[in-house]
Length: 287
Image 1 (tube, helix red, strand yellow):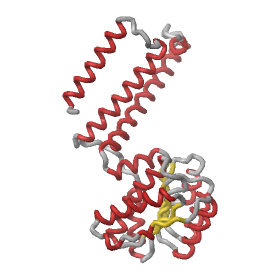
Image 2 (cartoon, one colour):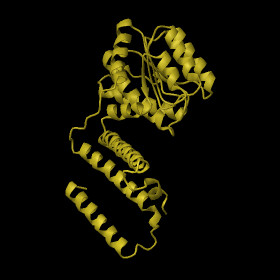
Image 3 (cartoon, helix red, strand yellow):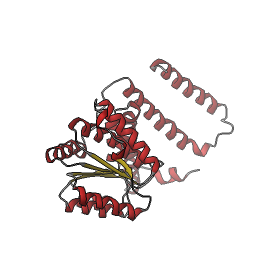
Image 4 (cartoon, helix red, strand yellow):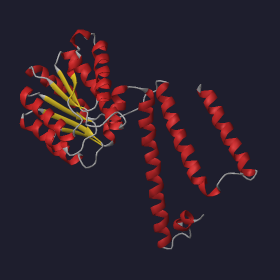
């Protein structure tokens, strides 16, 4: 759909809904009008910025220090002649954090192919193993080094949580990688992995949206992608317009929501102080 067609469709939808509302809006629950407007407005914002990215327009995404450190970590491994260890979490591909971790793995494997650095990716799920292998294979092909790729660089360990942590710890102690990268969904094994990596002197970079595990990664790792930084990193690295535009659109929606919250607080404060007669609480509670 071209921009002109998109604009015409938006105008026709708005006019059509206004006519429908004036005619009595049958089958429409009037109490849900705010929710309806919010869904349409937020959806339109996401579509607008996604289409803006698809047109090739410049969309600013701030630099994330943890991503810049990835190249530093791979370079350090290359200089020391040691491998890079990448852990994509312990959950399956139905978790968005695992998907984001595999996207970051594609970026890391491009650099290991470029610098001819060994890469070790232990996984705990069969489907993740297949997806990770495809991501690495594509990266090595893009870098013109398909001969360096071998399927054993992505290998299955076990589905069991602490057995997997023990297996990865064993790899760390035996191979002593110069860089350990943790990107995905983690639980109680996060601190076990990070402390072992810290004990061997590896540079460590972590990324997760698991709130309970972020403090452990922040404590034991050199760089940590916290929460939405992790998802923004995957969009930034993928360079896909729909992902980059989605991140920008979500940021704008958050700004609108923050603005509405502040406006509500100001209106309530003004009512309590007797400066205005508008009671925002009555408006929100009205059915």
